Image 1 (cartoon, one colour):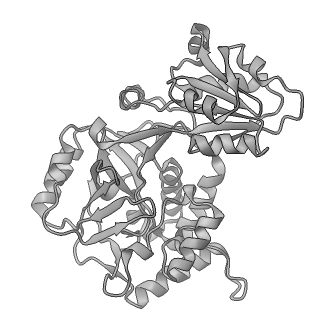
Image 2 (cartoon, helix red, strand yellow; image 1 turned 90 degrees about the vertical axis):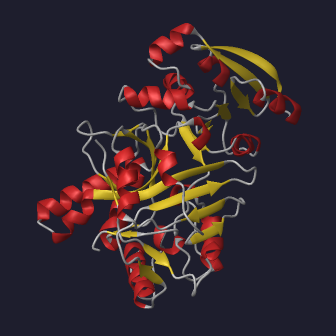
Image 3 (cartoon, helix red, strand yellow; image 1 turned 60 degrees about the vertical axis):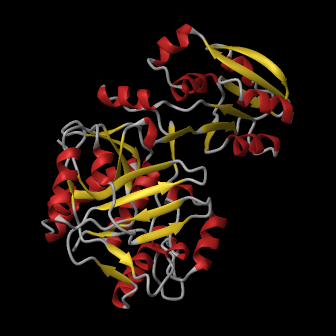
Length: 398
């Protein structure tokens, strides 16, 4: 069964810095312009260690920069370790009032196929290599991965007491609140509830696999820090409709040269129905159709998958169905887009030749795939809101 242990977290001293100024989104959704803006907001913004840049004057590579900054912030008292091992209840409240509550702890690692921590998406190698270099340098979990507990009733054990020890709003107006739970009886109640069912990794597959790789390296080298590497910092939320907002990740396709009949390629597996020209009115109607859709620079289409497509894909996921089409195209370059507006803009601005609108995966589908221990294709789900980097750090050496 999965294990969630308390740890002595590192947190910003609220007397020295405003939490609003130092939190940051997860590294994989931060573009270069946003990184610059976050870094200029406060010289101790967590993006500086989560997405470090090299210091050419000091001849430090980007990973050494992250290690140096963390050490400096701890030495100056800007980051302070909690006195006792703790779990950290964490609530996120959207501007529309929708709220979810989970708990940040040290999630025990399990090699694939050997435990009850279940990945639900395939991963790509480049981000995993970058995160491993960063973990080696800092020996710190800088941001939590996101796990979904299949244990019914976990949320009830997390109701916080008193005012939060961390309270901040992000740039989207989402409120992030963190409590420090160091009472042994309350910790044990949470751990007991948590250990009764598997955990599905919702977000952070690369960091989980990075943590596994790092643990193997330390143990092979006989490093004394191997004990701290037996877990990874994770935000765990109950797998329930009222706790999750799941969105799709759309695709754009390009790099194929001129004259490629993209609708015809989709026609092998879909009924392709022209909805009209690529205008604001047509695009608005497509988003209300609850169907997959294809948009080119000139025309928009509904995509209705045929029965043989589901059979060939071995899946009812839109992301699996799109993968059937890619071999029908000459060397397509696929980019993942978190919003439909972003995907359409890439087409209308000439950055891509087509955009494919995907529908969100349901909580029931996530649970079904997890129970079958199957992995969804990469970038199938987008969970929101995202926990913020900087609410708490987990040093492995502590």
